Length: 114
Ligand SMILES: [Zn+2]
Image (cartoon, rainbow, N blue to C red; front, side):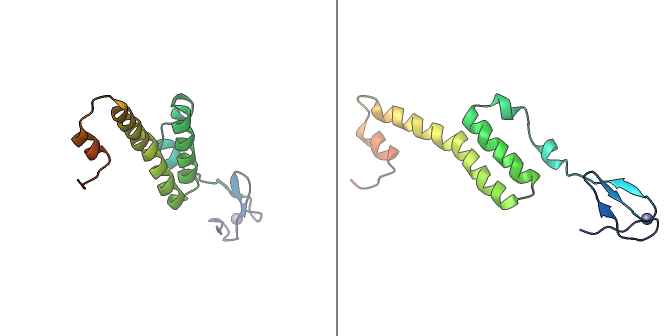
């Protein structure tokens, strides 16, 4: 990315935190994208259940780095942890109950034969 000095129209040099004009000394801060910080509940990185916190942090990193394709796939992983795993655990517990009706078991395996 190139930036021109608004004072003398020379190309600016990018430093660690500032754009600088070597001709006239003009400086301006490099704008960082704070969107990721605003969108995410960053306390969750420490406070959430570790597996979820880990995936949530990965999602945050993808968004921060503007890798939206990676973020989409990571979002799917998070939905799996929040919805799919607990659902499978609940189904497993129901399955192991004694005296469960045959029809209920058929529904649980989404079978339609018989
Ligand atoms: Zn300049």
